[in-house]
Image (cartoon, each protein chain N blue to C red):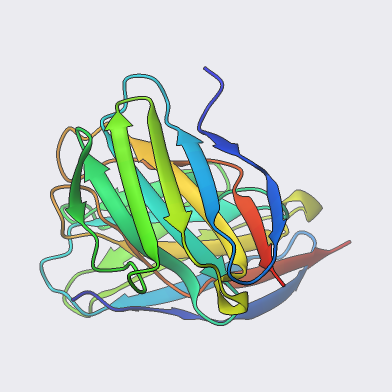
Length: 112
Length: 115
């Protein structure tokens, strides 16, 4: 089955700096790669996703890149703000039912 | 829409007791997922349903766990008997399955503590 690895496990950045989280996946059939943000005491919430036929996608301060050959994808957050502090999960899916395999998560702390 | 609704939000029980977690998916969604989240194992998919039918329950840890979806607006996850190692946050998520690219909407979770 699919295996998703995520790095780093924790990331501390100064407000205004950029944050990058990287994930690798094992199943070459995976074609959907969402990123979820989980705030304390809440369930994960989708913030951006990318499909296998796209190499990059951007939405305001967040962007995702996908390298299918290397089987890795990354989340980039620019101009970080304190409200970006949360746990971020990458995920991959090769399942027509929408089954997701999640990475272990990255705790992002943005210090003012 | 109120989003995915889970109850109870917190549950404290003693080892050996039966625990039932409940989930109401977003109206119109046809897929439902149960996850367990712990520090050690992260987010684990336990079971998922499509059109009320269980598709894959390979993530259910053992026979003490069971899940049902009697209709499109309700699902339960039952643990009987419960053990301290079942302590975790359990999430329910739903999606509208229209192909491989489906956003899952998570509920707020149920924090289960088994003493």
